[in-house]
Length: 235
Image (cartoon, rainbow, N blue to C red; front, top):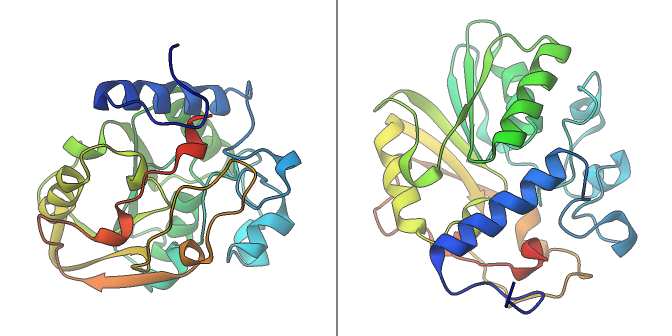
């Protein structure tokens, strides 16, 4: 493909293509998560032990649809949002649905969760997981984070789990988050700490395992703490 293993293409279009291709293979089971279980890292290992190490509680994993947790996250962002019954939540880069399902448990039958992912295979897997788990108040929409298929001022909380770092135009994502959030809405993100590029066998930095909640809409410039491109996801 003309690209060195572990490096990002310089063309933004090619970055998107590679991310979509890789996560499509993960969704269909052709490939393991970002690091792979053999790497000895929490990233890519969907076991209960690995999920616990990055912040999930045992109760988060109970009665969850098999295959919903693909081990692709680097933290547990939903818990810090303090979601309330009846709220509408948007999950950016929803994957197989794990965090969306956790949010659904918190907002209850009067709430609503929308998951957005650009990879068709992930959308199909998430919808199947929702049907299997009886998550009737969760819907998954295919789309790009830079142009969300979500109405203006329609959600109370936005969450993502180390997904915005994969988007070339991060400012566009933050503009979209500002557009869809209701006044006074909130979003979770990793704490504002930067890290250098890491090898595929390394665990994600500790900064990604802690989360901060922001009240109100983000600025158009976005949050520098999410401006990371981690090459290991494209291996």
